[in-house]
Length: 367
Image (tube, rainbow, N blue to C red; front, side, top):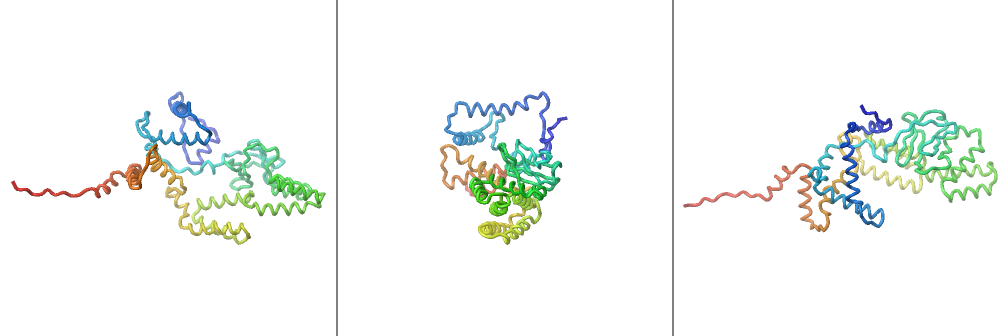
């Protein structure tokens, strides 16, 4: 019985997938993958000339189109046609690389900081000494207490010498320390942007002392928060909530429209115009946004299926080296190819052949 890594097994469970292990001492199972890697190195990379990464990538894509469209010596079939048959058995992943978060059990120290990937992230003061679940996603890190999200940050891929913090998480602790509260907000603002840091430094120079520059710092923080509202942890958390409602809840589009309408009535200026644009889009596309029902019926809700069809149906057949097509000829080839790839050749050919078939009656002849 395999002994799985805890995080890997949790990942496979959460995306509703079943891992299969190689049998012990069955080197051919592992070797088949290694042989494929070696084949790519020997047939594509060896002695190949290229200008830069972009040029190498373009050559790789052209090589893949050629290789996947040719008969394989391993199984005697064309790989892209085999893939199309296998894709019919695939099921949709619950999460993607962008949305899935690798789980980490963490504990907030006395300084309200949690250590992840060589960086320190601040969580609200009420969670000091408590265990939290951190979800490390591709672009952000979310912290949860049970099912409740308590903090969210943009993920820092490089080590930061200072903690990544949100001063609002310290309000309870700093209520009795007004000077420390002002200094924390000041330092937080100066880390956001060089021009903002220069402005804050000038304000502090003209108004020396925390009692003098403190009100200015807090007012600037409110302005910055309103201007960069979509980048605050609260806004990002609200966005994730609306995205989940739209995708998974019955009537999710109605809930998103109500939330946008509520937000639209509370803001002014350019932000109001931007929200109005999004509201118009959601209202016009409302009838097409029943995503929860589509998912229950196993229907795709993203553009990947259409993009894959453009590649496997048209690009790999019509864009080979030296090919030039007129509209009629290209359409004829694509019609036949689509019938083959969708496993509808017999029924489709009966319809097509009718237009080229004519009944012929044998004429009587006298001897």
